[in-house]
Amino acid sequence: MPKNILFVCVENAGRSQMAEAFFRKLAPHKFNVSSAGTIPSPQLNPIVIQVMKEVGIDLENQKPKLLSASMIKDSSKTVNMGCMDKESCPSLFVKDVLDWNISDPKEKTLDEVREIRDKIKSEVIALIKSLEEKD
Image 1 (cartoon, one colour):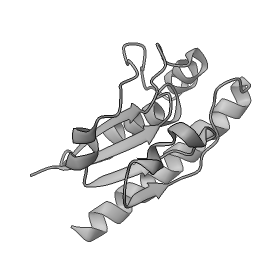
Image 2 (cartoon, rainbow, N blue to C red; image 1 turned 180 degrees about the horizontal axis):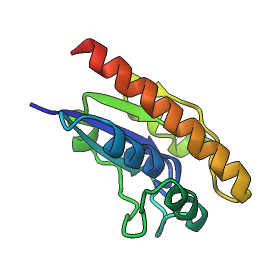
Image 3 (cartoon, rainbow, N blue to C red; image 1 turned 90 degrees about the horizontal axis):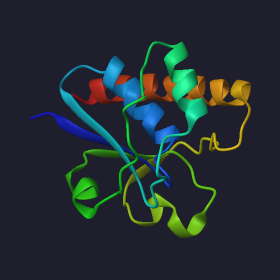
Image 4 (spheres, rainbow, N blue to C red; image 1 turned 135 degrees about the vertical axis):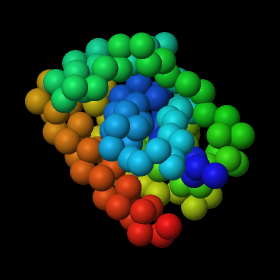
């Protein structure tokens, strides 16, 4: 049975989408991965789409998704990307959550979003290694 990995943030328009995409690309197929937000944005952040395209990942057709109770229940590992808005922070609803505390790319410059992207990639690689060690 594949393990379900869930990346969560508030809008699901940047960080959690990048994490999902990197995990999907880099992890073995024994994992199912998804991302969602507590208050999903209508669309992905265009700068996030651009910086991911720079590393060969196309997010053009991705849509923000609403975090549901079943997503949380069915998840083997949930990763909270970090919260600026404490009222709608996913970690309030999820027990045993890993919190990466990564800055929101919203209203950041292209170079700042590239730094966020690279930090997320590093965190995803470390997470994959730790999950593989547990198997």
